[in-house]
Amino acid sequence: MLIPHDTRIALDTVVDLVNTAPESEPPREETADGPADGLDGVAALYAFAERHHISGVGALGEKDLAAVRDVRARFAEVFAAPDPRTAADLVNRLVAAAGTTPQLTDHDGYDWHVHYFAPDASIADHLAADCGMALAFIIVAGEQERLRRCEAPDCGHAFVDLSRNRSRRYCSSRTCGNRLHVAAYRARRKEASA
Ligand SMILES: [Zn+2]
Ligand SMILES: [Zn+2]
Image (tube, rainbow, N blue to C red; front, top):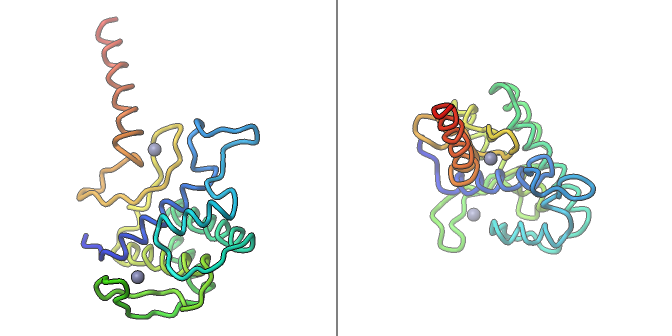
């Protein structure tokens, strides 16, 4: 599957956004009031915008934080969608509410690509439009099942499986995949020596 560079970037952004939600955090992040929220304040939202080079967001406030958390919950639903039609309905609603304005641009030395967010969009609408269209691209390509949740028992991380044969099961082979491989190996050894 050939994915345009900007779509790939938007997919990275939406995965990271969904994974800031408390329900995506493994138990290690547990606090007194349950799992921590990766977007627990306006400062965290600024950090997120900077991490993903989200341009032209201007001054951010509590209203933006609430709106982004709301968009995040909608995106989490897309990752949980059981079939393409459900995912398509969710993306359609998200993108329509954001008021998209497709615009070709080659800003900052990037090749020509399309921005979907309106020029004066809030950060929530910006994310809903651009990340929503990136997910739309995956659905159009017939690849909705690549939008996954990690299969490790104590991890709920979202990820996009871009492997050739759609065989990826864990958010990260380095962390969850490796952890489970070690556990399976130990279990086999124990069985063999019993
Ligand atoms: Zn751009
Ligand atoms: Zn995981």
